[in-house]
Every structure is written in structure tokens, then in C-alpha cells.
Length: 155
Ligand SMILES: [Zn+2]
Image (cartoon, rainbow, N blue to C red; front, side, top):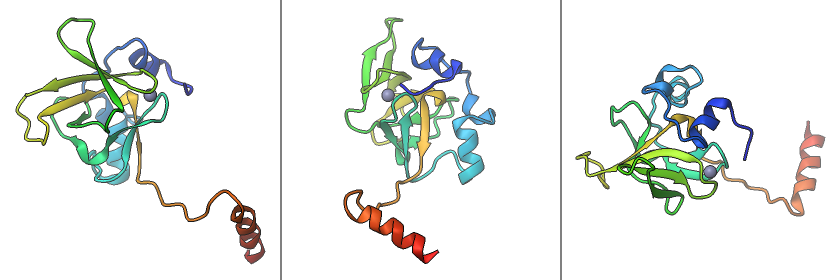
């Protein structure tokens, strides 16, 4: 596990739910930052990763505005999010399949016009946004050192 804040621990491990609208209203919130940096809380590219272990959980294009107050996704990346019966006996909890961190809950057949009609209601505190990865041209083996010295000599 990475170093987590108290608030993250409360959600990821003790399964608390962050306040409604938290990520949009809080300056350090996920959607607040997205909006500030990209002008939208619904980026088209990139992935949302687990704050606990860094696993990519959701593709940005599956995020939608459900108006429920928490980041919503209609589909997770295959096999990255696990559904488990919630302790409340009613809802279905979703956890990171890699590290078991609590993410939120999944709701099905609510009538959203999405391809799956599912809503993954995720605490923003459990997620991090990672913009699309730039393709690496150089490999670590061999060329790496040479490339570095070449760059240095040019400067
Ligand atoms: Zn994880």
C-alpha cells in the first residue's frame, strides 16, 4: 500500500463514504482538480487508478455524470473491480481486485442511458486520474545509457 491520508484510510479500509459532492467541491478533490486542469470532470482519455495500489480500474470514457454526487462509471476495466455483497445485506460493494480497497457500490438497472445500465458509484478519494500514457520510445536495456549521454552532450 502507498502512504494514505486519514480520509483515504477511512474510505479504503473502513469503508466509509465520502460526503456527497466532495470531489467537486473540495480543492484537493478529484473532480475539482479535473475541472481546473482539463475544464471537465469527464475527460475523454486516460484512466482512473486505485489510490491504494495504482491499478487502472476505469477508463475515462466510461465515466458519466449521474448527478448523484459521486464519480460514476458504467463499466470497469475487465477483472479489475470485484463485486461483493455489502455488509448491509442490500447493496453490492465494489473493491479493487488487486488490493481489496473499498471503492464504493454498484447499482444496476437504474435506467441510465449507458451501454451497461450500471452505475459504479465510487468515492473520489479511492481514485486517482492518470492522463493517457505517452508512448515510450526508448527501452531500458542497452540504448538507455547511450541516449542519456547523447542528450547531455547536445546540451
Ligand atoms: Zn488497489
